[in-house]
Image (tube, rainbow, N blue to C red):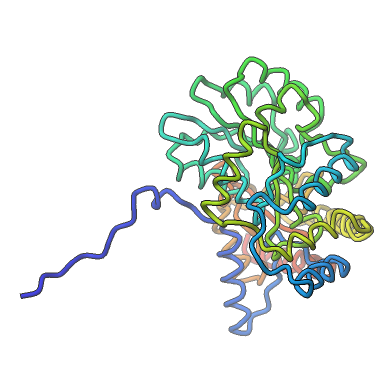
Length: 397
């Protein structure tokens, strides 16, 4: 007589693992398009430009030259050296190529850092609203996720005093992101100075600085990298990569500059998880950093022009207002006057108006009352999306 055996149940930690709602909205938008509905996607955070030709050709050449095998887990030496030279060129800062770990995209560095410092006895501070993987990975690690509220009245910049007030003896990691996703907020240098000065009282705290949008700044703003503060270099993880700057999201290529005491641990995690980044993408990454930067400037200028269009258009919509983002390619309009929750408006705009946007709550509980719109789309599509939103709002509010 056979006995039934129930299927294995995943460990409890898996129930704490979240997701990135932009991909869910993208899937729903694609399904609607497949059924014949016109959808304009302002949801996904992905440049609508193609990777520049010279970068593509470098990847193809690497394949033709026989770069088909494993590479060092931390990245090929030539790429790590190119990263160090690029940081020197852009920021005037010297880093040891041996402290650079190349990984398949930005999320890997986030996950590695959070797994290093997260367990049930620790706390990790993170921006809220913020990139959803921060909170998801913190919860997965078992650590206590402590949100840093980013407020509209501060231009969605963090307050150094507020951040420092949330540090406790249990805090092990502080995650910062400027320019920020989903808000486009940029933290001024004065606030960074105050934060770094205050961190001298908390030597037990490591900092993860997500600077993936560092080259997407507007109105003359200059990027303030936490690498420029030598007093925290020995506990700073600086995350950057190629996805946003060079329109290389699908190449899966990112890096971090790790402090000396952590770089071997990060490399060991790479060996245990993904072995190495594919070779041809790394050679393309060298071409991106060492080749002409014209395309970077052109994309930034295009995003800036679209930023002005989307902010002006949003502020003309009934019961919608939007502060001007200082960086990245996102607008984060305030929808509170509509009386709709963020998720309700996300669903209605997609299903009824054919506009894909992301509920602010997808980026944390402090995102309630907001939507995220990506202006990584053509001006023509942005204007059409705004017109559709205006039509829906006039009919339904």
